[in-house]
Length: 369
Image (tube, rainbow, N blue to C red; front, side, top):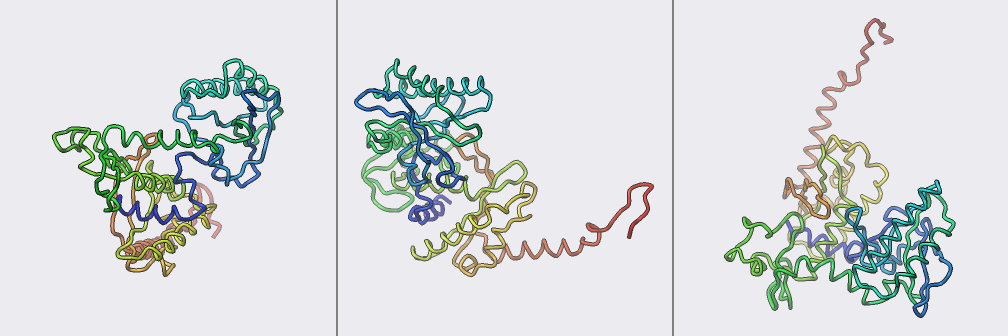
């Protein structure tokens, strides 16, 4: 299961359009095109805060410069002060939104011991934000430039994100010079508390080696590089491949049997292209696994996707904040099985068509047949 996720993610990570999913920062506007959102930023030069805020067009290529990260909970804050900037139409609501934003900026600076902003400068920044003319309903993020560079142009701020993203896996269980259980290759370091796709060793029932947490890496050692690929593949699954099904979510993922890397990359690219092509036509799926499920039809119709060396897994899950609770895993489904399901569905629809399309007049009304 995790190996399949790794193979899929490794192929995706080589495609420029999905690179952002394999970094610990995020795209604040994943559904918007360039220049349809605005970056509002303060400029600090030689420790002095400029007296006017500046703006620039938001660009997908610069996501690694802004270092935005979605925060959990109303009191959550980013590792650096990059946040959504909301501009309500009503003046009092706008002021309240900016005051809340300023509190998050202050918390980010304080919690992570940044020294580029001082307390008095944060108050000055709030005044600048209150004075800034913003258009309601436009898309904004706020950030800061230090000596003409965004946060992401400084290695120390990027390193903050890497450390924060992966230390949950390494801080309690790690070892040096071991074999990675995902890549089967030697690694200078492995971590032992990987929870991708619901796998966990945090509970006693899943622990071995005398229930010693620090030794849990012996159960499932994973190298840092493999963790990064797994995390990115999971983000793609959540954001690009997921559908609704009676209160749960699910996604379909290809699994490759004895296929070379070039073929894997080509098939994964073709597979993801189907989702991009159908992005605007995938409504009405909350009550049925295959109703309007065009991706299954695409698998059947496309020669590359229906090859016998490709199986498919269906994962039913629920999200708990950033964690994934795996409810059901249907594995090793051949494309021919999808074809049988679609054909059976069509047979049932044809059989019941006269009943489902018949006109029944309301009580007291005559038939208009």
